Amino acid sequence: MKFIVSSSYLLKQLQVLGSVINSSNTLPILDNFLFELNKKELTVSASDLETTMSATLEIESTDNGSVAVPAKLLLDILKTFPEQPLTFTVEENSTIEISSNSGKYAIAYAPGEEFPKSVQLEDPSSTLVPAEVLATAISKTIFAAGNDDLRPVMSGVFFQFSPEGLIFVATDAHKLVKYTRTDVKASQVADFIMPKKPLNILKSILGASDAEVKIDYNDANATFSFENYLLICRLIDGKYPNYEAVIPKENPNKLLIDRAQFFSSVRRVAIFSNKTTHQIRLKIAGAELNISAEDIDYSNKAEERLTCDYQGDDMQIGFNSRFLLEMLSNLQSDEIQLEMSMPNRAGILTPVDGLDEGETVTMLVMPVMLNN
Image (cartoon, rainbow, N blue to C red):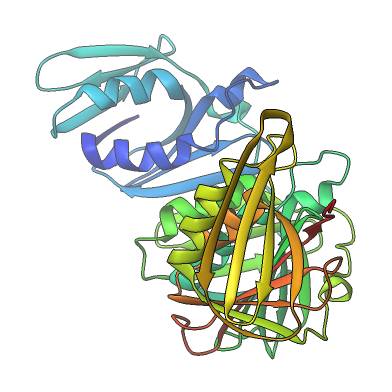
């Protein structure tokens, strides 16, 4: 089999697929890209058994066939070529020959049949989501997902689809983010937990796309198809915790403040906080917010005063500054609202402006007990 393809076009597609491949695989065949040639179409796939992604490329050929080509070697050689057509020829002696304007290169290949077959979803449900909406939903939530192997359900993002709208939730028990869209709807009620790795891959390629993503899903797997890509991944098995139960409903104390100003103050004061707890203290009275931190072991302390718009009782509450900074940096609004009830109940952070029609973001951060 033989085909001709543009070097930069091929490299661009392979770099996306390359992010699926693990640095250490249990099966050596997974260190390869699967090339499947069908006349003028070349489908390239990469897999780590949990996630499989393929891209369909337009090329010049009249042949059919499939081979598995070492991924790292192929990416390394493609990165060095200036833009030019490359001719790939599969030889009888188990090598694939690449011809460029300046030379010839031979790479050993494995038979395509050895590559694991991708899963076919039986009787899936489907939903169409604009690429931009899905990319935003992933980037707004994924940072809050946990890394605890003992609680796998919390290490992914929970997708909840219904005719009312779409909800995406992530939590690691210290912070929680709920992202809702009422302007995009699904035909039936469904929910599943998506692992982080395929979501990070999607996030990196959806940002620049204005396509619609077709999401098909059943109890065990989900597929995302858009443009020339298809991503299939195994879902996280288990029941997601009841996140609605931890979002406090009655929050009489409301603080309105400029996000950028609050973010830079917290970032400065946090430098002086204890290196294990990262604890900062917010003291709110009238229209003044006092942010302070102290590391008793090293006699470091800092304090800043900001003016704010506050309605509620005077209060003091402690937060882990890292969680607070992560949340503030993932919001794009000019102003944010922090709602609180008591120093031992979670604070709720919401953007006041900068949202699309039908879009809501709720971020919840657990407090740290203050030792007065």
